[in-house]
Length: 82
Image (cartoon, rainbow, N blue to C red):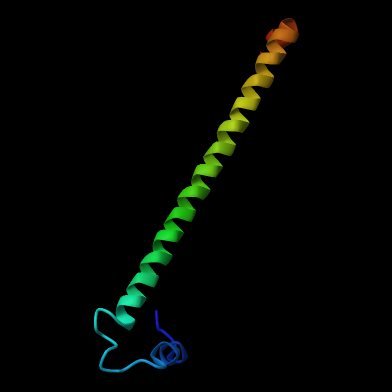
């Protein structure tokens, strides 16, 4: 992936070129920002998957409850359908 020159220019604006690669300057800030972005994306993905699993589980519980209700309220009809 190529980074646009405009983005690099914006990042370097106001930076001392001699200090750009020092561990306390721009590179350290970029590493931290990228790590934060990656971790947040992973967290969001995990939460999305967890929520989808909860929805599937709830749907399965409702279907099971509806089937159980049908068996209890009209067992003859339910047994005929099976």
